[in-house]
Length: 93
Image 1: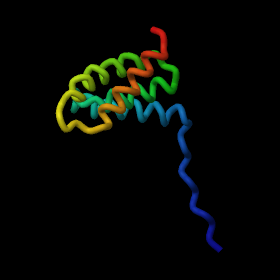
Image 2: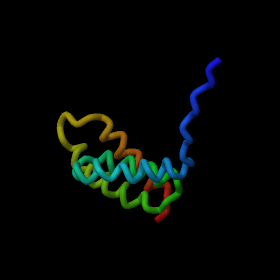
Image 3: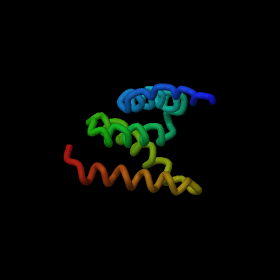
């Protein structure tokens, strides 16, 4: 009878989040004018109640205010813009 293969240890959730946040730097650095790297970083930080979310959300919103005026832009730009504007409207500075 064979024994089950040992499962790799899972890191704690906090380290998973830290790894994801550190890994998210590359797309923002490589594509600094693309809003969604900033948007998703803001989402992650906001869900962790980290006040740093505002900086990333502001940068994403600055870019989205430009991209949403372009003909043929993807609807996700409008959705992200509305979501960020809602965050700022319901969250005192």
